Image 1 (cartoon, rainbow, N blue to C red):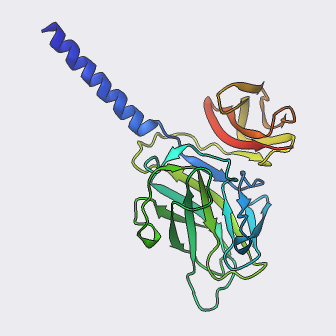
Image 2 (image 1 turned 120 degrees about the vertical axis):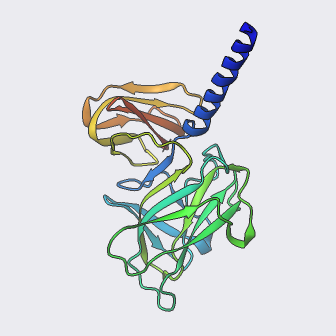
Image 3 (image 1 turned 60 degrees about the vertical axis):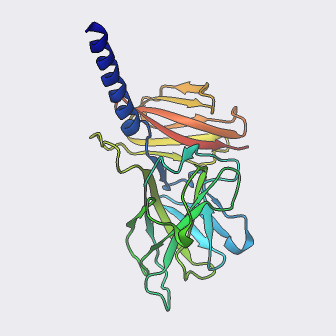
Length: 267
């Protein structure tokens, strides 16, 4: 009898742990393109070229052709996630350009495997033209990708192509991108704004928040803490020149919540 109760209790605890892991283990990925490019780079292919500018309100993408593409880092960057980890992407942008024959041109979201610019798959989504305000578009990663491709396996990076119809030197403004799992249990929490720039960091990293930044840690990919400080301010500047050229994690303690962001150190 005691063994049966123990077994049942163990099974129940295991089930609770499993549910917790399923619903809480994956934080959403955010790219806030305000005063920062967040590590995004222009596509290296000449027919997909563009220039990216970090601006206070958003990141500006200046097209060099009709199919400009940007990606969330070079081929060495790896988010370390799987296609099953997230199922939604929200993108906030402004397309002030007028597309002559197509009133609702398609932009494209790409997913890439580790170490390659050859996409796993892509999703087209219709974007307005002549926009004067920012609009948020939602892409369902569980929907069928373009060309009936299959979204599966490890995902290292994402990419975005500007809406079809942009011309040379046209500019599209990208404000924010969120990658999340809509099936996760949502925990109510206070909205905390945290912005970091520049990314990549070239010796200094600036951090600003709408709340007091109590503590800052910077760790490498192995989890080793490389820098630790207590700003006790809404804004701070971190010296990063001692870091080698690599990917690092920034951890900020704000309102008793640890906020984690990824950045690249370059010299």
